[in-house]
Length: 218
Image (cartoon, rainbow, N blue to C red; front, top):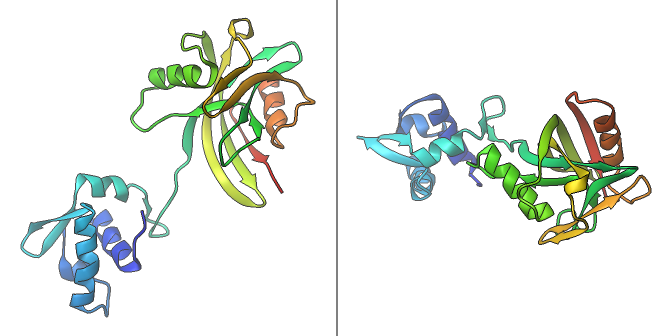
């Protein structure tokens, strides 16, 4: 959600206060009529509402948006995404996923699926298995957590916290093509994002949490 710097100022005031008067929401040296335009924009987006004479507060939607503001930078920040990631090994082969959609079109990673906002862990695990592997009831056990940055040409494309679960290779029927790519067995010779097999090696060797950077393109 994009804000003018004037709207951003007003939102940051309400991050710190339950309610505020118009004069407190208005940046210094901004004329009242100019501020009214930006104030009305926040009202139209249902982010703030009038709660008294000349007094405004955040709406529930506004409180949600306010949760994405950093009090150190006074700006909106992106958050690390949570994903369900699956690991399986069969001899010298590993469960991999080749993406058929942007931003990773044609790239290969471990199998993962975003955990949607408001979704329970149980439902997220089931959806990820069903969506990426075509089998919702595969047995699994938790392995570890990985913080993954995905980068291309120095640009951070994604930053995610992956909850890694191990699957029983004997239960998998591969390859499996889903709407976003193909799950398949691959080995160390398979072309994948730089860093993917480094992550796999760490998964092979230990179950401690770690962080990695995956690079593609360029």
